[in-house]
Amino acid sequence: MKLARFSALSLLFAFALLLFAGPVRTTAAPHVPSFVLVAHCGAGDYSKAPPGFIEPRREAMIVAIKQGYAILASGGASLDAVEATIRSMEDSGLFDAGRGTYYTRAGVPEMDAAIMDGRTLAAGSVASLQHIANPIHLARLVMEKTPHVMLVGPGAEEFAKSQGIELVSPFYFYNERLWELYKKAKSAGEKKQSSALKGDRDDEHGTVGVVALDQQGNLAAGTSTGGTVMKMPGRVGDSPIIGAGTYANNESCGVSATGTGEFFMRNIVAADICERVRYLHVSLEQAADDVVMKELVDQHGDGGVIALDRQGNVTTPFNTTGMMTGTVRADGKIVMKGWSKTAEPIIVPASQ
Ligand code: ASP
Image (cartoon, rainbow, N blue to C red; front, side, top):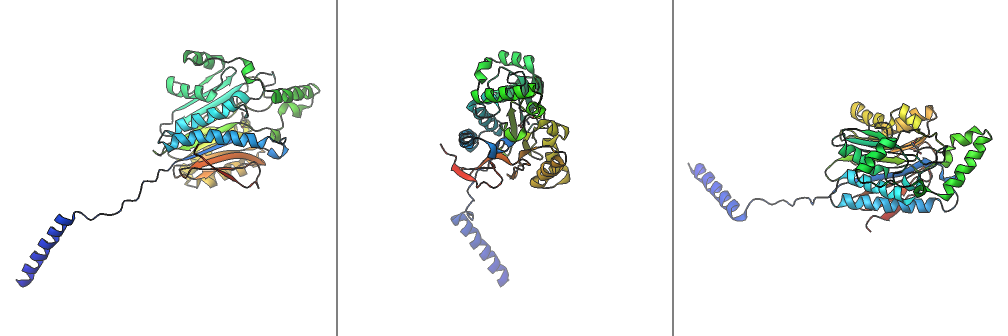
């Protein structure tokens, strides 16, 4: 009886305590936004590049990455960050994309691009463009404003006009350095030095690509390119082929590739990496390494990829001697590396 009275009293006491003190408070962990953006500007060999080649390209990448970072940091979508970062690199004229596009054998630049939304698997791509300043933007419009995934050549440019995009003249893409290289390669080709017409991959780099993960946990990937040096007119590479050079799926990962596109198309490299993650449950790093450093190497397929998953893991394997990349996370530090296998990374703040 005494015991029962005692327990009833202690219950009452506990109740009163709760009433006056309120519920037990725990200090909630502060919400740390998490997002990642990784960009590349092509695989190749920077050690053969003339002096002063690397620095302006690194700077242009940093400028571009800052734009993507600002979008992600303010809670924006990975798709917007991918498009803005690539647009900036296309406009710089320093990469084989947009304004800096290489010439085809016919002396006219031709561009390809693709963008993909990992949340919905929506994708848009464009190829063989000759008059579009920002192919990545047109790829986005194909994704959002048409029932199709890919538009090419004059049809794609007609669509661009219908969307209010101004067609630019070939002079917009004029670049003295590239024109000199083109003339040299063409005259060597006329003397039947077939390597000149094939292009020397070691001297080529400049395709641009970005993969991003936003604060909502959505992945997106995009790639923009002028293709390979001295490509045949009408040749389309891997970059605009969904699953070959560009792929994003929230279930697995996002990938943008660079290298001799024919190998990336035959091996559906970007999708293969993501499907290995999805079905074999291997890490992103292992999947990308197995494809880029084993399968492609066995076939002499040169190049590399940037890959990112929803957990924020990033891997950037390349089987050439260089592939410049920049990665930024919520800590606001852009980590630039890859212009040689041994180069020390350079870290710069992402805030303007
Ligand atoms: N993959 C691109 C293409 O084959 C070229 C490159 O990445 O350098 O069109």
